[in-house]
Every structure is written in C-alpha cells, then in structure tokens.
Image (cartoon, rainbow, N blue to C red; front, side, top):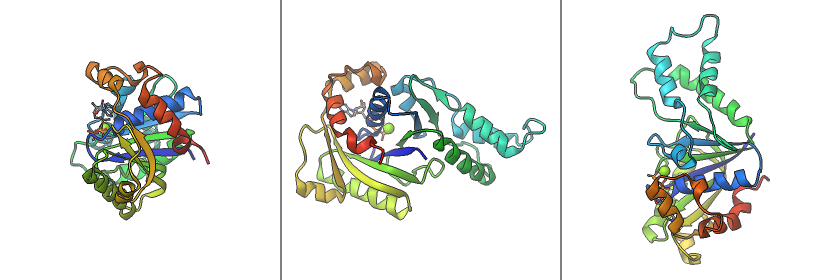
Length: 250
Ligand SMILES: Nc1ncnc2c1ncn2[C@@H]1O[C@H](COP(=O)(O)OP(=O)(O)OP(=O)(O)O)[C@@H](O)[C@H]1O
Ligand SMILES: [Mg+2]
C-alpha cells in the first residue's frame, strides 16, 4: 500500500500549490514511484505540474454509462473499466497523474462506482507515494479515491476564522469516517510560527507555516509549472525543513 498524503482546507488557502510543491520535493528526492491525484473537479493540478491531462474518471464514467454496450466483445465489464482507468493515468516527468473530474450525466453509476473503488485501491497499491489534491471543504471529499490517508494536511491562513474552519474540516473528516493516521495543520502565507493558543483553536497538531512567496505569485501570473520555481525559493526551503513529517515512510 502506498503512503497517502491528502490535502484539505477551505477555498483558496493554497492546497493545490502545496500539493504541487510536495510532489516536486518527493520527486527530487527520488523517494519512490509517485501518483498525483487531482480530486477537484475544477482541476488545475495538472496545469501547475505541467502535464496535459488525459480523460478524467468522470468522463470515463459518463462514456460507459452512455454506451454500456460499447464494451469490446469478450471483455468483462469490470476488466474494461480497469483498462479505461489505467489509460487515464498520464505520465509526467518522475510522477504519474490521474484526474478524477466529475460525471456530468444523470445515469446510475452504482455498479461502475463499485468497480471503480476496487480498481482505485488496486492502482494505489502500485505506487510508493500518492498525493491527493482535494476540493475545498470536505463535504465533497471524493469517495472514489481513498477513504484512508497516512497524512491529512489541513491548509489554513493564520486568522482565527481560518483556524476554526480548519478545525471543522478535521472534525468533518472524522464524522465522514475517513481513516487518517495523522492530521496536521499547515499555515500558509505566514512568515513565522503561530502561537500555541492559536494552534489550539484548530484542534490539530501543528506542522508549520509557509511564507508568502513572490516566486509562486509570479509563476501563477504567468501560468508556469511549479518546476520553474528556483530551488532557493523561501517556500521550498521551508517545506523541505518540514518534509520529514510529511513524506517520511513509517
Ligand atoms: N505561499 C504562497 N505564496 C504566494 N502565493 C500563493 C501561496 N500559496 C498560494 N498562493 C497563490 O494563491 C492562489 C490560490 O492557491 P491555490 O490554488 O493553491 O489554492 P487552493 O486551496 O487549491 O484553492 P481552491 O480551493 O480554489 O482549490 C494561487 O494563485 C497561488 O499561486
Ligand atoms: Mg485547488
């Protein structure tokens, strides 16, 4: 079973950016095979990683549901779904990426969803690391990817409102019965560590803070991939100093 790092946090806190930075660090350290999962239907993880996405899982579900008879003769339906999912994995430089998307149709997806769960579990087993970028909030946290994470990183700003929202997200994860080995608070766009009293507001263990980084702002403006950020960028140095607690296999 691969080591799963999942991102959570309210809108715009920096989940996708930080997921991409973690992917970059794991890749550069050559820690093992790596699968990036974009579980946000308004996805942009592929763009920030500089990979052209293949069909999303949502699109595949729509195709199968719209034309259930279009399965190659002699191929069992579950085998066909597995084949389509495998072909949806794009190869990046040093990592693979899969986009979950969202089915648009109104058809019944129960059977396909059931098969998909098994296929995803099998796929995840093939990698040493899996980094999942989720949609804002946890209500929509994809049931199709994984209900387990070794590390859930809840990203927040340093405000009290933000920290309370991080607490709610973590509580929701528990209510939704996500099995998380450890949940960690990562404060983004803040240049120092937050006070202990504030950490308590989040109810989470504190991982650290990442600074506002001019290099990230520039990449974002130009639409350039995360790999174009210089290695000396403050945000990379800080993330790497927190790395052991994020990607260490234990
Ligand atoms: N530490 C940082 N320094 C500078 N800019 C940042 C930093 N973190 C994030 N940003 C910028 O903030 C914006 C939002 O970040 P991002 O898309 O990663 O957030 P998100 O939580 O994934 O948003 P969403 O909830 O919409 O998926 C982006 O333009 C990104 O470049
Ligand atoms: Mg995002």
